[in-house]
Image (cartoon, rainbow, N blue to C red; front, top):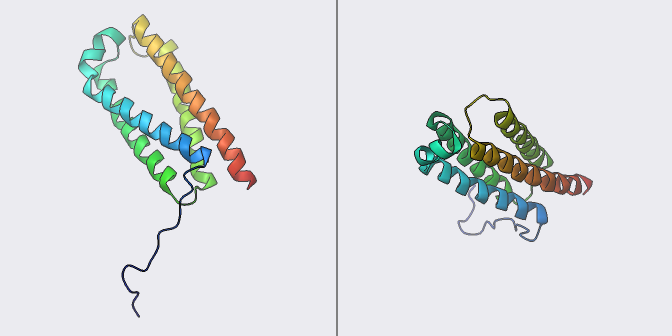
Length: 140
């Protein structure tokens, strides 16, 4: 038994869905930021106080997260558990950035602390928007 090639259709993806849009924006901004952190790891080390040994894993993790966000946003049907995982990941990232900003784990400069706080704020906004989308998705 065989299926003729070229007859299978890909399921339609609703690109107007606000949750899908925010997942894509989160994914792209995470990817861009990951590339910047990797490419400028040495030059940002001085102004931020963020050692290169920390910047590189951050950048790699961000690229991995961006890839996951892109995959989730690209599914024809977004699953509740995937969005719950994204919300949890963003919430944990927010907490981790706050801990790094205030716990003196690494010798951040004042600009480095501000950098971490802005990052925590951005991640918290994404988590909030995605949580709102998750609630709407779960209600369907």
